[in-house]
Image: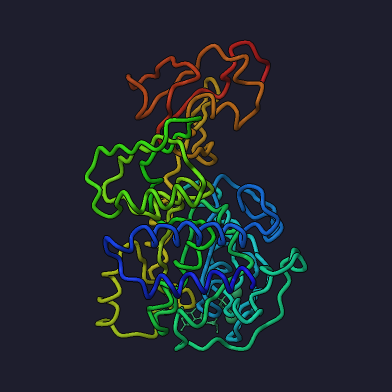
Amino acid sequence: MTTVQKIKEIEDEMAKTQKNKATSYHLGQLKAKLAKLRRELINPTGGSGGGGGGLGFDVARTGIASVGFVGFPSVGKSTLMSKLTGTHSEVSEIDFTTLTTVPGTVKVHGAPIQILDLPGIIEGANDGRGRGRQGSSNVCGELEPLPNRTLQSSPVKAKRYSPFTPVARTCNLIFIVLDVLKPLGDKKLIETELEGFGIRLNKRPPAILVRRKEKGGIAITNTVPLTNIDQDEIKAILSEYKINNADIAIREPGATADDLVDVIEGNRVYIPALYVLNKIDAISIEELDLLYKIPMSVPISSREWLNIDELIEKMWETLNLVRVYTKPRGLAPDYSSPVVLRRGRCTVEDFCASIHKEIAKQMKYAVVWGASAKHSRGQKVGLDHILEDEDGTNRRVPVSSSV
Ligand SMILES: Nc1nc2c(ncn2[C@@H]2O[C@H](COP(=O)(O)OP(=O)(O)OP(=O)(O)O)[C@@H](O)[C@H]2O)c(=O)[nH]1
Ligand SMILES: [K+]
Ligand SMILES: [Mg+2]
C-alpha cells in the first residue's frame, strides 16, 4: 500500500468514527498515525522538516518578506501577480498555464516585497497523477498540463496535492486566491491541502509543552479546562509516538488532539493568510455584500483592477513589517528606502546586521527617534533596543567606523 492509500484509509476510518468517551483513545491513535504518514509524504526520505526539500522549487528569494499566491488553476493568480509587480507571468483561460513558480517584486510603503506566483493546485494524488509525491523525478518542478478538474468532485474522492505547496511553507504571507464564480468549497480544499503540508493558517503555535524525561511516566497538567481533548486521547497520541516519560503542560484554551500532534511533530509553520476573492467584476453588488462577510478576505478584480488598494493595505498590515529610516549625519532622513525588518526581529542589532554584520561589533550606541524612543530629539540606545515601525536612526551607527 502506498502512503497516500494508507492516509486515505485512516481518513475514511476517522470519518466514520464518532467521537465519544469510548472512541477517544482510538481517535487519538489515528490522528497521530495520520500525522506520521503525512510527514513521510512531505519528506519521503525521512529526516526533519519538509521545508521544501527535494519537492520544493528553487527560486531566488529577494526582499524582506514574501507573499505566495496559492489557488486552483485559472482563478487569476498570474493576472494579479503580473499587474502588481510588472513581471510577466503568462495569463490564459487554459488551466495550468503557470507551470513553475514565477517571482516578482512589489514595493509597498518603500519596502520591497517578493511575490511568488505558484502553479495551480493539482488534483489526483490518489490515482497517481499528483506528481512529485511518489518519486524524486519531479524535483525540477516541471509539470505537464492536466485535463480540467471537475468542480463538483467531492473532497473525499478527489484529493488534490501540489508538489509546489512546500514553497508556500517558506512564505511570510499566503494569498489564497479564489474565483468568486466557482464553488466556495474550494476554500476548504485549499486549506486542507496546506494543512497536509504542515502549514497552519492564521494561527499561533499552541501553548502546549511536551518535556520528555528519562523516567517517571507521563504527567499531564493543564492551566485551562480541557474542553476538546481528553486524557485518553493524550495517552493514545503519546503512546503512538512512543513517548513513555514526559511532562505535558496544556495552557492553550480549547487545545485539540491535532494541536498536541503539531507540538510533537514540531515541523509546523504558522503563516498568516488572506483570502483574495477574485473576479468580482462578474458578480452583482448583492453577491459582493455577502463576500465581505468572509473573515480575512478581500474581494478584488485583478483584470479590472478593482479594490487593489485595499488588498495592498491588508497585505501590508498582515506582514507587520518595521521600517527604519536612516539619517546621515547633518542631513535629512532618507524616507525613500527604509531598512525593513520583521516584527520580532527588529532590535538595533538586527538593524545593524541587515546593513553589515560587522557594524554591531563596533557599535557603542545608536541614536533613535520615533515611536520607540523616549524623547522626540532622539535617544541613545544599545543593541537590544527594540525598534518600531517608522523609527529613525543615525546611519553612522558605529562610532569609530569610516563609513
Ligand atoms: N472576469 C475576470 N476574469 C479574470 C480576472 N482575473 C483573471 N481573469 C481571467 O481568468 C483567466 C485565468 O487567469 P490566470 O491569471 O491565467 O489564472 P491563474 O490562476 O494564474 O491560472 P494558472 O496559472 O493556470 O493556475 C484568464 O482568462 C484571465 O483573463 C478578473 O478579475 N475578472
Ligand atoms: K490559467
Ligand atoms: Mg498562472
